[in-house]
Image (cartoon, rainbow over all chains, first blue to last red; front, side, top):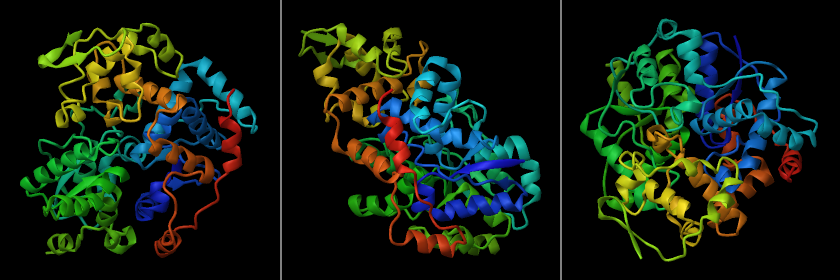
Length: 290
Length: 167
């Protein structure tokens, strides 16, 4: 199977080690990624969508139309990109009038959105195409029962009408990926809580993030395992910022799901950029090794 | 006049009820489903912003939308900007109102009428000028190289400018 990866902005510029983790793990599983030139920002589902939804649909449709030329499914690795491209793809497939309006705009640059490819998050490839049991077979360095507090974030799952990834109230897809990698997924009261990044009032999001971190600490998990770079921003860098602001100490390492898989497949921590995290993760490997 | 709504919360009717406001919103992309709202409140209990700030209430936002409280909703400091876009309300709504989409339509109206916070324009401008939201910094290329990734590509900004200019 061939897939067209859509890494978006955050994972190419700010967290390129997540891109590296996805590329290396896909390579380890023999899944081919075909890069496409000319992708722009998805565009961002919060601010850009708030700016103008028609422009948001148009730029998303342009991105999808580039993938349509090759005919492979688009694989997203950031929950924000997943949200934008999935919603635009579904809306344009469902609404011929909207599609016509958008295509009038795209015509100005000689492009057309046809609605011939799917947009899917990379984790669904693990479950639906490759299979979690086969993923487990690629694991050479199981995570040694590392206790991982799963954090799904919002846009992988909701709105479920659009995303069609998993049950938004009882998701299992990340748990199963972590289990396949030899980790032990754990849940807590705030597992499904939003990271709050889109809130204008920081006092709201600060308390969401701290509540989640407090719950993770309470479960005595070794780290958080998540799938969204925006959530990562909130919990990794955010942990330091909130620690200073509210005089608290959490010390919860935060790891992206494909970094966990990469480690389990024998990649070195620096190959998936673990040394670049703000909250240090070194002690986890001592535990996994020992 | 005071409108009494759930849990003893009150909405001051500061402005005249304006049913024409619904039609204003109807013409914005995906901004018509508020008309299906029957104020059951299913959207409220699991709303994270509501749970961390009582002043944010998706049901009240839908009510104010139906009553046409434009002056309250369409402002740079309106409560709509505290929506987390988590879509939990859309999961719970029995009427398929999709409250997040209505809130986004309200935000679009803020932009159209020059009443959006500056952060919105900053991001949309970044996309139109550079093709991306999160810009590369001086360390981006070095990091990419260390990780064995290809250098960043240029973004077709001219194409973006052409396609966003109306129909």
